[in-house]
Image (cartoon, rainbow over all chains, first blue to last red; front, side, top):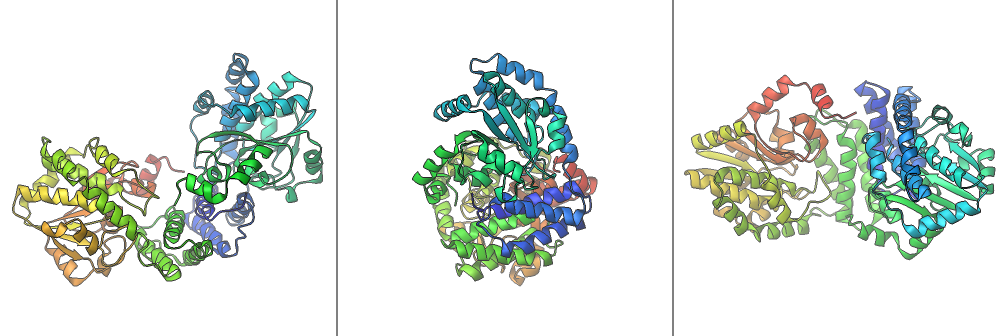
Length: 306
Length: 306
């Protein structure tokens, strides 16, 4: 997905939020915004939004000196989600369609995003929200079919806290059949995206092989990924891509990818064809068909955006 | 009210909306955003937000060549609100406290704002919303008392469409007592703010003396106002200030001012102490007391903003 002009105000909003998380000094916040402003005229809009966000967060790091402003937020989210792990397991076990319930939870967990939005509700309400989700049944059936045929699944993680919801889904996948699951986190801290530390905090090493993607982008930018990660990307029978950042960076890429996320910004809503706040489970193939059938202008109109 | 760093993302959002209203060419939209970006490092944050917004909209005019992109939107809003004029009159006449009902309507009409937000609901729903408003009774009593003692009222208008709601309030004021009411509009088009043309379209000349303030700011910036306007400002017994822009430019000024508006942005929410979406009727004196009692830091905390 390319960067739209609508992303520019959002880069400033994110830069200010990150600067405030990094420092209490308003003069420093101002310097961060000024530096972001200076990069705007040279912005390559054919880059994906997370590629530009990566530059924005690097500016924040350079100016504030804080390379992990969301560290505490991530720890809290992991801990808080882990405290509801048993509840989520029970929800899955008590449901008729256990894999679907686990998918709903994994999608709901994507609400734990401090880039696209300033905050999120309680962990409890996020879990409750999943009950109201109804993934497109055609896409879900296709997903289940792909799982049935897969032996190696690459699972691209998004945020800390959310990875507990991912663990629930992974455990469900492993109940269906013998699978090798490779769980991919960011190489370095960026926003509240999960790193190796986070994955270990929630015990993902017990259910999957954890690797980092080699990049500090809040996304999966293949040109920045390690050769190890790229080998898995090519070899995987099925790729589960969590979150908006991974969607934005992979929506135009080939591969048997299923995107699971919650729509949290109007630009992704227009690009994907889903309403704001919608839960999404869609394959890259179905997405390509949708995009071929609907021009961006159609989607813009449908979104009622002026 | 000074400009906060939170206003910067909003200036970009407004610039993009205005550029899109002015031109269909995305390259032009990009040029507008680039020019706004270049002004950021030199931004004087001790200026009020509408003073900076004025520069942003001037940039849009210079680049797109369109000096009144919201012309059609303003005409539609005036027409649509006038079609509900009789309904609003009936609502006032049928109520127990007619002045209060007219105030509620005038505040509700401030929802018709295309600067602080991308759009607004139907005119009908805006009128319905007013039914749920409950102005602070102490402030309302003070307002009514001031009206009783006044002979010259200066009424600072905000947006097209909204001025029909203002007409309802003015007609109610005139039923209470003999009054001279001077209705102040913007000198030149800016966003969807009302100008002389708009005031004439909705027949405000039948109930008030209409003057322009001499400025194209979306606010009342006294240093930019005409001597005529300033004479009335000094001579008025009571000033009714509509909307966020007038609040932002006058909240620290002396004078017997009553601010009537709907809170449409988190920065004004924090500054004024009212929640987002709240209807507000408050005197400048009560506002000063509130600000003296609560530092901005307290209000920031109260707003739960990080």
